[in-house]
Length: 159
Image 1: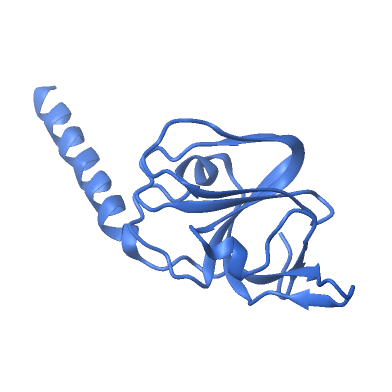
Image 2: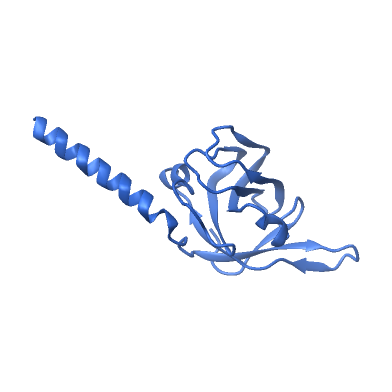
């Protein structure tokens, strides 16, 4: 009985260490997106392409970018929820500062939270109902033209 507990403990530690050591890997690419906005003349302007990894299950959403120590500037994690609702995120066990982009079912950006504080358990909330949340490195939301009112355009498969 005691040996089983010890073995289980070491297996747990092994899984934990593997998840932390794999944290620096690039994200899996499931699709690519870009954001469309309008300039002062009313012409459409597109931001650069971002490769995204879809996060669809509750377990994947709970893990998010925890334990990652970096992601590249042309990738992000795209959280997909089954219904529209107000969303709350935190930065528990997340080592890198992020921008969080809250997106409606129609693809419109409803809120952008820039430079969220790593390792914080303070909830970051979007009160408006949204279906998707994109997390990218801090500062990237401006570069990709993800601002309130801009529209996400899927260049490959949709969620």
